[in-house]
Length: 439
Image (tube, rainbow, N blue to C red):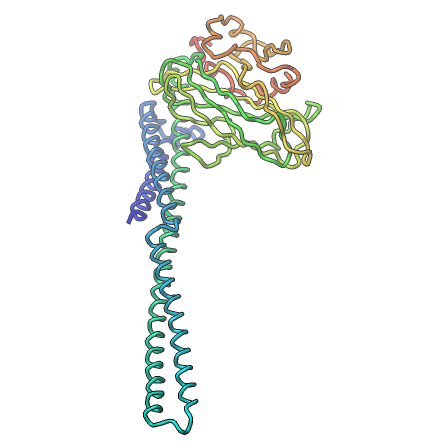
């Protein structure tokens, strides 16, 4: 019965998910001809759609977790149906053994009858014949018992297997519903953020947020995968409603002149969404709400194609937020973690990359020129940021334009190129909605 309830929940989630999606997709109808385009939804409508999508996603995740419990219970050898099937099979085996013994008794009784000497009395012969008859009757009874026991065992095993298959199918539906709900939620959040941006809501501000990498080896070998962590920390004094972190891997060959990003594949996983997901093209990973002073971890898995050439690499990370009231902000720059790319067959990577936990590569505003300075200096843009104060730096959890790695570990050229490649995702969200309406 529990499996049926889980399956019913899965169907409900699967049916609800497209409905939530339909409330979001009109925001992407910009490309339609004017005569065909529908009226774009208001921010209020998109807020409602995003809230509904969040509810659907929360229910889908809860249902998926419940489905895992049901599946584990169904697959357990201690499951009631599994225990019953095992007992029925033992009974069938015992009945088969009894049938074999009864058949042997018939054979022995017949042999004893045939072995009677001519001098045997009528009473002895009658007794031997009765023994044969009794043995045949017992054998017939044992045969019937064996047939019934085998039938019961087969039915019990079928019931156990059917329950396992039903639980697996139900879990598959729940997984699909959770994935669909996540896609809907992401689309709804993005549509809402876009609408708020176009509406010209509150300006985004620098915030004490960090997204730092740990556990990344100092070298990654082509043809292998490595798993590491991205810790997102809310260093502000308030709860942030929708936090988004960004992760981007940029690599070059040994000369530093040829980009080799196409050989690198980055995936993410969280406790709320434990399956591995490919990092989106805009490099974002939604982590949901985050309380003041709280932190959460995102698992990252980097896979380098076997044909990836030896060279240099860097992982760039940053984080921002958007609240339900439209307020927003984020880290003013990027944290960098460097690594080397080694050719396939050159052994496993070792050590830990540098840069992610010690600083960031800053970039703000639209004006200014790109530049680099020093082995521990900045890779960023001049202009608005040059006017920042020490208090601004403190509010962002690190220097707004400092990189925590030296030339030996993070070549400034590759860090700069990666910053350009990462684009708007890796800079302060002021870039999306500029502070000061005149910009």
